[in-house]
Length: 203
Image (cartoon, rainbow, N blue to C red; front, side, top):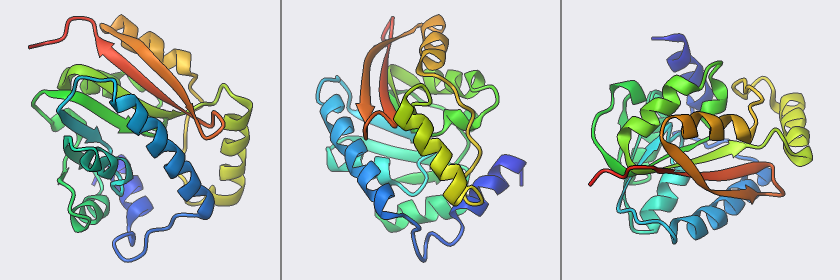
């Protein structure tokens, strides 16, 4: 098992028995769900791929909204939890995934890469129209505070994050033919929902 697969399996192992989510975590997810639901209303999409679907929280929102949504993850425990919830999920890395989806989504994945451009390119490769990201906003005061508290209180559980700025993501996607069409604050700007649109949508 690769280092990254082991890291994420260690993170999610045991979640099929008991999902570890704090009250603050629940509040954050409710805030994400509200902003995500609003953002999706303005997009022309039918098929959705959630990359790094984790325990399926975001994937379930797409399903509830009526999209043909599936997810992939490299952690067997995470995929097992998603399937137990009735979600379509597969044990697969993004670089091994083929196909074309109207929208490719990722919630809190890219910040764990020292160089996030290669996995971001895979998100773009799989998208015929949009890429949607939910990212920690390390450029906001509340984002920095939340990251500090998370490290202080749960650093032994959390997977390390690099403190990329929202502009860093915008620059990489733009130079690869995707322009940012939406940037929305979530939970007092602790996170940002970003939507990128392919400059030349494929039919």
